[in-house]
Image (cartoon, rainbow, N blue to C red; front, top):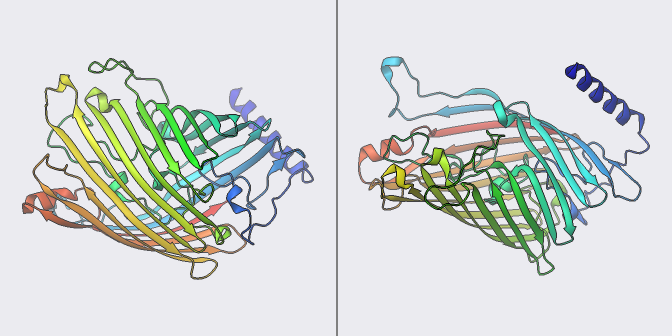
Length: 422
């Protein structure tokens, strides 16, 4: 009965959208580059106020409803070094290659009563609890103060906070997404810098002095958990949650969360930011993880440049009986330029001390130069992206350290991705 009711609801909604073509106000073309910074990109998938598809909106603008779809299909090639491969099991250097669907997102977003923003989307390419990618309500207490609750992106890292599908490369930097290395065989104690999507509450806004702020409490369990499962910290005697904050300075107006968009070729925007978070008794109550990040991004007409640097300290809880602390560093610089209205070449350099500074004694770090190319196919919301990345290794004390450092990371990586958004 429930399934039948849901089918009726979706069918009725589809009929409503088809029956109200007069009320569907397609936004004006933004190709002239004026007033583009007003684009509402907070849903993290597609801007609300652009000319993709259509938007239902009341005459006074207090109510907005926008259904959206984001589909990405990619061809992938990954070549791994021989270390770590067991030839007895006929393991090949080429793995995790072929075709994939990174994201297949369907959702709706909008505004109600002129004060409430909302967003709900599912990712059919994910599994488990990650199928629910986002679900949140944002209430505007004033022009400079907003309160958000639900599942959304945690306030850390410009690269991760960028609108999906508007990143410079099809893949995020390894320094953000790949897990660290620890010299212990403990259960799941391998965090990464990126904290990604999570459940929580956040207070945020932008002051008249161009200062943006985000302060929030999250479960710290990531996108794969939709339940309340945390306890009180045995060591610190506070809730074992992710405590997060981000402070930005945007002197030229609000920086769009985009790393390349043909509709934003006349923008002049800059962002300087600091962020920090503390995941108390994360990873099955075994470590306390502290992260600190610094970021810079600028859009100057056709040019986009950005860079980030981040630090993480891992401190084991008393019950683990390990007194050592581990410190990790990572970061990247990247740039893209529209040589034509629709063609954007890109470069990136990514570095990652995955072993821990002065901790494991392994020394050395990963360095990953990458090149990319984005082509925005006119008038049909298609984006074709391609990238090649090489992961090198520098400064390791021994050959064994060098061999271990890139385990699980492809030495040569190539991706071609076609994206459609509506």
